[in-house]
Length: 427
Image 1 (cartoon, rainbow, N blue to C red):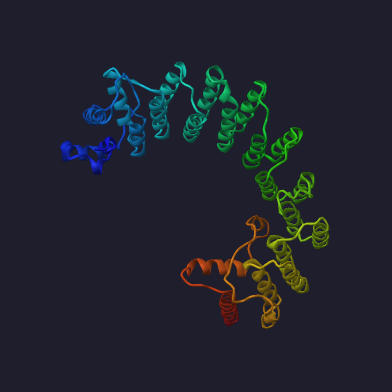
Image 2: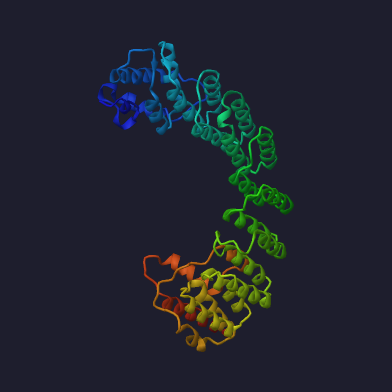
C-alpha cells in the first residue's frame, strides 16, 4: 500500500477506523501552537511510512510525505511529524527540511519557516534559488518586507553565489508591493556588493515606478536605465506610456517615444502606434497624418491598431472621406478590419444623420464575418470605446451561444437607435 494514502482523508486505510477519518477534516483548522490531537495521527502516519520504506541509517528522507501534506494544506500535521521524527532520534535530510520550509511558508506559518531556514543555513545546507524565491514570495504576500531584507543579509554570509539572483527577486518583490524605498535600498546594496544592474532589473524599476511612483521618479528610473546602456523592453514602454496617459501628458509621451527610438523594429509597431495615439488624443489631425506618413517612409507596415487609431479620430471628427480612404488602405495592406473599424464607420454616419447612406460604406466590408477584437486595449485608455463597439460587446457577451455576424450586429444597432429616436420625439 502507498504510504502517502495515509494522509488523504477519503482514502485512509480501514484499520485506522472511521473516527480517524473524521479527525482529518479537523486538521485543516490550524492553530499556531502544537495540538496534542495531532500526535496519534502523526504517529500512525510515521508507522505506516516506516513500513513502506527501507532504510538503515538515522538520516531519513520523507520529503514526498511532507509534500503530500503540503498539498492537503495540513502544515500543523507536518510539524507534528517533524517533532515525532526528532523524538525518535531520526535526523531529517536537507530535501525533507526544504519541503517543510515551503510547507510552512506557503501556509503562512512564517515564524516556523524562519526557524527552519536559520537551522538550515547554520548547517551545511545550500538552498536553491527556487526555495529562496518561494520564501521571498511568502513574506511579500504577508507584507513582511523587512524579513526579505534579512534573507538577503543571511545569504550574503552563507551563500554568496545566490545573492545576485536573490537581489533581483527581492527588487521585484518590493516593486510589486509598492515598496519603492526598499526597492531603491536593495538596488544600492546590490551595486555596492559589486553586482551589475542587468536588463531585467533595470526594466523592472521602470515598470514599478510607473505604477507606484510619480512621473518624475519614473523618468529618473528611465534615465538610469539609459546610462546602463540597456534598452527599455516592450512592457517597460507600455508601462511608461500608460503612466503618461493617466496624467494626460501626451506631449511628454511623444518625447519619451522619440527618445526610445522610432526606428526600433524589435517591438513591432508599438512605438509608432503610441505616438499616433498621442496626437489622436487631442485630435491634432495634421500631425497625426504627418507622423503616419513618416511611419510608412521608415519601412513600417501599419497593423489593425494603427488604422483604428486613425479611424477613431476620423470618426469623432466626422471625416467620412478619410474613413473611406482608411478602408481602401487597409484593403491594400491586406489588414482585416475588426469590430472597432466597423464601429467607427457606423458611429460616424449616424452622428451625421446619414444612416440611410451607411450601406455605401459598409458594403465594401465583409458583413458576414464573425466579430473579432484585434485592437490593442491601450487605445481605449485614450480614446475610449465607440457607441457601436460598446453596444456590440454587451450584446455578444449576453448571447454567447449564438454565432454572430457584423451584419446582424449592425442591423440590431440601427433598430435600437431608431427606437430611441422615436421615444425621444414622442416626448
